[in-house]
Length: 155
Image 1 (cartoon, rainbow, N blue to C red):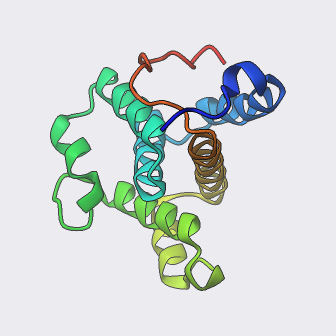
Image 2: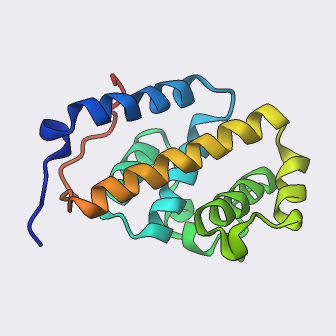
C-alpha cells in the first residue's frame, strides 16, 4: 500500500493539537509504561501498524519484557500482568469497542477498584488519543518501521 498523506508535513496544525493531548498525558499520574501498554493494546485492536511499531519500540526502550509484549493480545490468560494493568486493558478495550454503545457496569466497577476518578479520566483521555492517532495513521496509510524510540517525546 502506498501512503496517502504525510501527516507530519501536511497536517502540522492537527498534529500540534494532538501533541497537546500527548503532552498532557505524559505528565498525568498514570504510569508511563501502563499508558504505553494501553496504546499498544488499542493499536492491536485497531490494526494500526505504525502505532504498533512505535509503542512496542518505546516499551522495549523503557525495559518492557518481550514476553509481556508478545502476550499482550492474550492478557486475560497470561499471568504476566498486574490486576491494575488488567483493569486498564479491560477498560481500554471497552472504550475502544463501545459494544452496545456503552462501557458495562462490570468493566467500570473493575477499573474503579484500581484507579481514582482522576486517573480514570486520564485513562479515558489516553484511550481517546490513541484511537485518534490510530485512525489518522490508518486512513493516511502511515508506513510502519522507521520509528525510532522517543522520536515524538519532544512534542
